Image 1 (cartoon, rainbow, N blue to C red):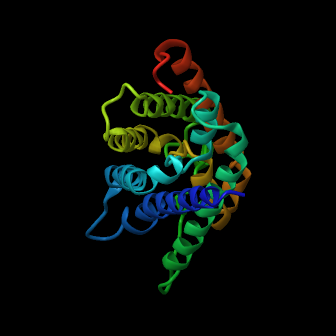
Image 2: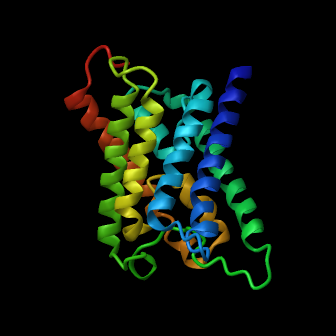
Amino acid sequence: MEHSTYKKWSAEFIGTFWLTLGGCGSAVLAAAFPGVGIGLLGVSLAFGLTVVTGAYALGPISGGHFNPAVSIGLAAAGRFKASQLAGYIVSQVLGAIAAAGILYLIATGKPGADIGGFATNGYGEHSPGKYSLYAAALCEVVMTAVFLIVILGSTAKRAAGGFAGLSIGLCLTLIHLISIPVTNTSVNPARSTGPALFGPSYAVSELWLFWVAPIVGAIIGAVIYRALLSNSNDD
């Protein structure tokens, strides 16, 4: 196996680790902290900042996916080799699990600690706004589809150089501002898997949706971009 492959896997592990620790950590540790209370806006910005910082630091090594749905969507769009999917997805999931484990140790490191929902995703009774399975699925599919369109457009050869990371990070911030009340925002199966393994028991039973919906949305976004927006100079 090529040495560069390990570097790509390592970059995806670290990037997804940072996304999960930074984004979910802001929700678990800071969102409701007395005197701080960063709330929905702060958590949304935290997720966006993890992508911006990770994209510029690690993107040159691996492409900066940090998300199984993104990797699958890029493969569907012809921007990523399908043969590399397994290594990327495993690295991303392991990175998210490692981050969730560290976050759990931090969050429980005080007397009377209560991790609450532990930044997990859910629908129905476990949706922050009590939105139905249908509403949650539709939200995740549409948000991920738009996310892929923004990623593909921002990283196309005709796009302005050097701004892809910023555009993608701001898009993820906006996605969280819209969808935190619906599902607590996934659009990323790895980010959902890590906290689910350490959070409330319901999170694992509902995790299937936060794999299926983002992947379906990513493929839809890739198909829309290729059919309506791409040109021969994009790849």
